[in-house]
Length: 186
Image (cartoon, rainbow, N blue to C red; front, top):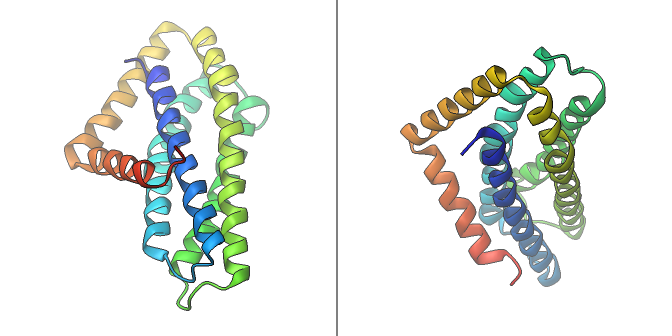
């Protein structure tokens, strides 16, 4: 599987996890739960470690770096937009993380903040993923020289080898599948 195909496959995993997050938060807010921090923390872990550190890490450190090297601007254009959206997503996840870490039970305003952050993150990521799949990735495939694409693929494969060797990749895959199985809408 080439690097772009792998990134797009990861997008599908992230989309399913986002659906599960929204399902979890909507159900939690409807029943007025005051404490389900352990479950929310699982979503934060999956998003932080799989979607952000893993997926966005490969994009930022490997693919986007190669695109900048090939002449794409980093501070303007599609790469700048993607980086800004990654940061905006991190802010939304930061709200969810804070809710996991706070000591007292959740209040109605806490649940509202959780609802806004989860839906905000989901909406942002869905649009973000569409832009990458439909615009940015095709641009990379068309404009990066074959030797550079081979470097991108090799670097992504090495990244995945390291995650597989540590067991992290399998742990995160299972976590995502479990969350989707329990909370994604039918």
